[in-house]
Amino acid sequence: MSAEAIRLAVGRPARRLFVHQLRTEQLVFWRSREAAFFIFIFPLLLFVLLGSVYDGKFQHVPVRWAVLAGLVGYGCANTSFAGLAIQLVLRRESGVLKRLRSTPLPSATYIVALLVSTLLVFGLQALALFLLGRVLYGTPFPSDIGSLVATLLIGSAAFAALGTATAMAIRSAEGSSAAVNFVLLPMAFLSGGFGPTTGYPAVLRAIGDVLPLTYFVKLVNAVYLHGHGFWTQPEALLVLAGWGVAGLVLAVRNFEWEPRER
Amino acid sequence: MHAIEVSGLRKAYGNLEAVRGVDFTIEEGEVFGLLGPNGAGKTTTVEILEGYRRRDAGEVRVLGHDPDDPGPDFRERIGVVLQSSELWPNLTVRETHAIFAGYYHAPRDVDEVITLVGLEEKTGARVKSLSGGQKRRLDLGIALVGDPDLVFLDEPTTGFDPAARRAAWEMIRSLRSLGKTVLLTTHYLDEAEQLSDRVAVMREGLIVRVGTPADLTTTDLQTEIRYRRNGEDVLLRTNEPTRVLAELTSAAVARGEELEGLQVRRPSLEDVYLALTADEAEVES
Image (cartoon, rainbow over all chains, first blue to last red):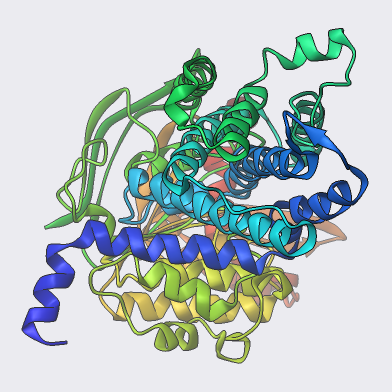
C-alpha cells in the first residue's frame, strides 16, 4: 500500500467501514435463499398473479396501475418492515449483534449500513415491479420520478422504524417470521396492498384507515396514478410520519444487542 | 505494564450480587485461567472487561482503557470468543474471516489465520455445514484476525472431542508464544492446568484463590496415601509424604509384609477446585 493509500484508509475509517458493512449486508442478504425469495421475489410473484385477475378502471385509470401501486406498498412493508424485523431478531438471537459489538465497527455504522442495504433491496424490487408491469400489463413508468423516489424513501424510513421496534418486541427467533407475517398480511390486505379496497365492507375499510400502509399506498397512488407531487398529500405524510416517529422512539428505547433467550 | 487490572469490582443484577468485590491483575503475555462453577460470576466479570456490561463499583483497566468508556483503539486490540455465536450460516469460512478482517486497521492475513485455526480444508465451506468443533475454531479465527494483543476465550473447547481439544490447546499455546495475553474461562480443570500460567478460582462472586496451578496443588491439600491392610482400605493424608511413607514402608518391610494396593497421590487441581468450591457444610464435615 502506498503512503497515500494508507493516509486515505486511515483518514476515512468511517466511510470505509460503512462501505465494508454495506457489502457484507448485501452478501448476507442475497446468499440466503429464504430472504431473497420471501422478501424480494414474493411481491413480484403476487403482482404477476393479481395483475392477471384484476381488470377495469380505478380512479379513472386502468386498475392494473393501482394493483402495481398497491404492490409497491406491500413490497415496501414486506422489505423494510417484515424483512428487517425478522433479520434483526435472527441476528440478535444468534449472537451476531453481540459479537459485532466487540469489534471496532461502530454501532451507528452497523445500523445505517443495515438500513441502507434494506433500502437498496427495496429500490431494486420497485424497479423490478415497474419493469414487470411495463412488460406484462403495459403499465407506464412513473411520470414524476423525483416524487416517487421521495415517497419510497419516506415509506421505507417509517416502515424500517416500525420493523426495528417490532423486532425488539419479539422475544425469540422461533416463530418470529410467523408473528411478523401475522401483522403484515392482514395489514397489506386492509390497506390496499393487494389491490384497491373500494369494494370492501365499511368495517374493514375503517380498520384500514388507521394503518400506516393505507396512507403509504394513498401516497403512491397520488404520485403514480395521477402524477401529483408527494407534498400534495399532507394527511398521508402526517400519518406516516406519526407512525414512523412512534416506531423510532420505541426502537431506540428498546434496542437490544444481546440474545433475549438464554 | 499490566494487561488487566481489577480492584474492588462489583456488579449486581437486581438483588443478586453476581460479583462482590473482585481484585486481580494479569500481566502482559500471561495466560490467565478463570475457574468456577456456574453462577460464580466468571462470565459477568469477563463481560465487564470486554465492555459488554457496566460495573457498579470498582476500578478496571484493560490495556490501559476503562472498558465502560474506552478509547478508539480498545476494540482494535481485543479479540473475543463468546460462549456461542452462530454468525452467518450461508457465508463461507473465508468470507466470514474476511468480513471480520475488514473491521480492523491492521488485520492479519486471512488465509494465515484460517490455517492457524486448522480450517484450511474448509475455506470454501458454508458456516452452516461445519461441525460444532469447527464452528468454535471459526470463532477463534475471527477473534484472532484483527491481530489483538488481548484475547478473551470463554469456554473455548466446550463440545470438543479429545483430539480437537488437544489441537485447540496447541493453538492457545501458540497465542502465548506470539506474546498475546489470554484470559481463559473454562469448566475443564485439566485445560486450565495445562494452559494457564496462573489460575483464579471464583465462587459466589468472589475470588477464593489465585496462583500458579503448581502453587494451588502443593499448598492447599495434603498428599493422599492409600493401601490395604487385612482387607481394610486405609487412607492417610499428610503434609510430609516422604517421612510418612518411609515409616510405613520400613515398618512393613520389618514385618515382612507387602503393602497391598499402595498408592501415593498428589492432589490434582481438580481436588483443590472441588474443595474450594464445595458448599460450606461439606467443607466443615
